[in-house]
Structures are given as C-alpha cells and as structure tokens.
Image: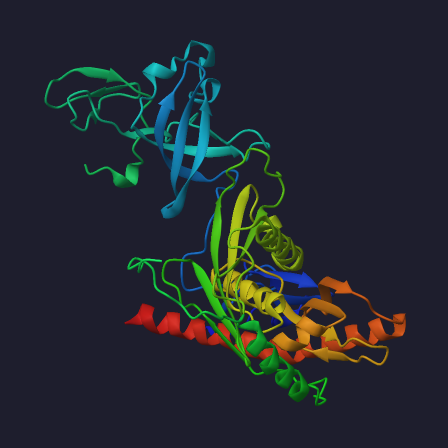
Length: 193
Length: 270
C-alpha cells in the first residue's frame, strides 16, 4: 500500500470511517494525526479499517505492561535485583530505564525458598516481563516467573560465557564449575536439532 | 613628576562616550515614529532537523533579527522519584546567548538574568504542555531547550514555535504544533496593538502580549502578558489580532516539518 506523508495535526478522516491506530487521536468526531510521518491504512476483517501514522525511525517505545524486555543486572540484594532495561522486544532503547525484579517474582513455584544470589548475578543478561509501571517512588517492576524468562547470558568467574545445563544451573566450559542461575528455556524455534 | 613608563598617558581632558551615543539614539527614534501596518507579519524562516546531536531540533528566524535555536530529546526515564504516574513530564529550558541583546549586559550571570530565563522557561512550559500528548509517555521525561541567539523583538513567541517544531521533529506525539505570536501596544491613550514588534517597539511598549495557539484544534494554549492595557474591548481586539497572526504563521511551520521529514527520508534511503 502506498504510504502518503502527512503533517502533524492533519485531519485524516472522520471517526465513522476508520478507527484510530498508533500515532493518531480522535477529537470532535474526526481522526487527527499526532506525528509527522506516513499514513497507513490497514483493512481489518472484522470491523473498520485502522488508520495509523508511522515515522521513518523506530518509534520511541516505553516499556509497557506485559512486554518482554531484555535487561542487564546491575546489583543484587537479598530481597530484589536491580536491572537496567536495554531492549524492548528487539528494539534497543536510546537510554536505559531502571527496573526491579523482586524475590517473589523470580520463580513461579516455591517463591519463599528462592535465593536471589542463586538466580542472578551482576552482569547477567536477563529476559523479563514488565508486570507494573510502578508508582512514583519505584522503578518498573519485572518478573521472570515463566519458563521462557530468566538468565540468557552469564559469565563465570573466569570471564567465560557459561553454557546452560538445566533450568537452575549453568556450567563454565573452561573450568567446568557449575553456577546456579534461573535459566531461561530456549524456545524450540531457536534450537538446532 | 618623573616619567612613568609603565602607564599609557591619556589626554588631560576626557568626556564620556554617552554624549555622542545619545544623539544617535534620538535620530533613530524620530525615524521610527512613522506609523507601521499593525497587521504586518515579519517574514519567518523555520527549519527543522538541523542538529545531529539532538533527537529533534528547529531554528526559527524572524525578519529583523530574532533568531532562536531549539533542541528536543525524546522520552527518557524520569530521574526524580517524584514523577507523576500517568503522563510524563515536560522540562523546558530557555537560555539567552551572551551576545543576544544589543548594547552591554548589565552584569553577566546576575540573578536577574537567571530569573528572567526561569520565567521564560515556565512560560514555554505553559505554552507547550497542552500540545504534547503526555499521557502516551508515562513515567518519562521529555526535554526541550531553546537558545536565543539574537533578540530582535518577539523572542518568546519565536521560542514557542521553535520548541514545538523541535518536539515534533523528535517524534514526540503531539496534538498540534503550537504557534506563538507576540503583540505590543505603543504608549499613550491612542496606542494601537501591533503584531510582532521589533526591538525598538518592544522597548517602548506600554503593554506586551504573547499568544500560543494550537490551530488545528483552534485552542489557545497560553496567553502571557504584562504592562497596561486600556479597555477590555482593546484586549479582545488584541487577542483576535494575535490569533489571526498565529493562523497565518501555521502553514510555514508545517511546511518546514514536511521538508525535514523528506530530507530525513532521503538521507535514510542513501
């Protein structure tokens, strides 16, 4: 579909002909554009077509509730782990947001027996899901309480990237020492068998 | 006295330079007393997307020498813990370059200058906040800063337009581009309201007004003024004049955004 450029604040169409998508807003029964970019009209099978405006660059995303994010652990505590959110989905962020993974959100089962020191270490890359935007005082709250969430990349004390053995252990290929981590299960489409 | 070789000996008699400066200013004022068209808009030049280090930027220049450079940065994490949960914050900064005003600065870095800058930043925030869709950026911080390079009158109005352009160029979702327009009223009982005053007119003015309008929604986002007006009818007429000026400036700003988008598309394609 050809994309036509549109100006900011331009009246695209009336609210009866289409529904407002991303980058648009409705006012007085009309749909206006809220970005200077290209208009896209997608036809939905069940209902009105959706009108959205896209800019050329990646739209600046903010972590939304339910989004899977990639973060790096910066410090751990007996009660929680503090992380820097680096990617949302597969889109890198220009500036890191701070998040917190509480002790009871690390695992889905046996939440009281969890030790943060045996799940994460500073410097690990973790896949997590945003469960709350947090109130004014706290950061984003994240959770790894699913099989596909958890540590993806970790380095051993020797500085070598470790290989996952099970859902709770990783082994260093050089020194063969085992370390405890809450490992993310690799999704079947990424496994080569 | 023995000759003092370390000092430069000046003339015995000296006179202050203001003796000669006063004569020139009087001549300028007499020339400027000729009436000008109150509806005349100064030619406006606007260009968006010129800075590479900021996410969005804009440069606005009014004919007669008002130059403002604005830069905007997209959503970043709100640094202070006191950020509101729904909707983000808009932080505005307004700075005057040291060479912006004609004549000498009273005292560089004085508290009065900083106070004036802070007031201008608060005025910018008041004008821009209704235009930005802050509800789309919860717990985020949007920053926009305006640098006044040369003050030739109507500086705040140009800064409002430039800052709105910079935010739009940065990809921040907005309801509309806020257009700023300044007016001033000449002193005296018969003083009429003039659109976009020049530097001399602004200095002599008895009342000053800056309007910010969102033309697509026909919504006024800020009315900032000072001085003395005469009748409420005159104020209403001034507002109508200012709104008309804003509507006439709006297409120029939108065109600059479109050109910036095309330029960005062309550089991304190559």
